[in-house]
Amino acid sequence: MSDSRQFPEYAPPPAEPAAAWHAETPPSARVPRERYWLHILLFLLTFLTTTLVGASHWLNFMAEFGNRRVVAGVGVLAIQGLWFSLTLLAILTAHEFGHYIACRYYRVSASLPYFLPMPFGFFGTFGAVIRIRQPLTTKAKVFDVGVAGPFAGFLVAVPALLVGLAMSTVAPLPPVFSGAELGEPLLFKAAEWLVWGDIPDTLSLNLHPMAFAAWIGLLVTALNLLPVGQLDGGHIAYAVFGRRSLYVTIGAIAVAMGLCFYSSSWIVWTGLLVAMLTFFGWRHPPAWDDHVPLDRTRLVLALVALVVFVVCFTPAPIEPLDLIRPQ
Image 1 (spheres, rainbow, N blue to C red):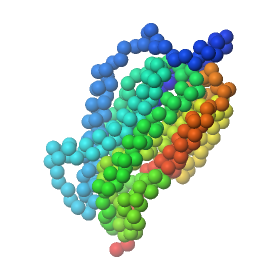
Image 2: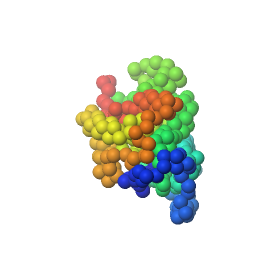
Image 3: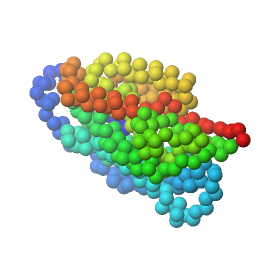
Image 4: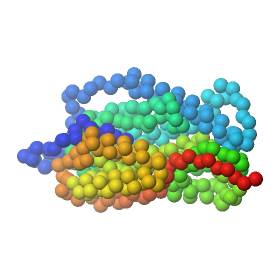
């Protein structure tokens, strides 16, 4: 996810010659010095929290829905927790550096990624974000910076998913089971069938921590590709539709509100989306050429981004599951 809140009201001077805006954006003379210590500290804290969470996922994986009793030492747990943490951090890092490298290509000042640790829950992180310190003056720049992150993260998540599914197992659910049911995006279902074929109804897929991290990667990709405001999908929608992207944002929020009645997972996310739009504004910051159609190559890539969104999206990401099976 990229953070461009530094210039929500930016608009180029109308008297500026159009040719000048095609030039690369020069680095600002007052670009703040990078606080490397902060980036390193946040990364290490996120590595710690995701590894701790990963250790618990490994225990659950080895327990096979509670059918087995697992005892492991601290050292073993620390090592096994890396399956989850390294996979998830690789996906997040690829995503954020996709944005960062695109910014550097256009000589737009941007920070290194800020990783956000989560000391609770079963993700271990709130994700990561970069700060874009200078305006993206053309729709091509807006599109390239917006699409680079999801594409890069997706390219890491897909092989991780296939490897993680290969290391997963199938096991019967116990007569009484309490846990969480994960929504299965189209890509996940296809990969599961490719690796496991048709799983009997008496068995359930027991996800390896690496596969679970890849599933989170698909979820993060889909959420970031929502065509809302200044999310990555909002950048893409603005580059394609210009000022009309406001109506796309409104439609996406209406759909998200409707999904709240289908899955409680969407209540929190929809609230965050509305809060983001209230704080940063519903309209995307304008580029000087917002009236000029996007070129054909980027329109094709926008369709690819739409396909990636569709295959990564699930209407019910996480649902509590309390199952009592007949004896």
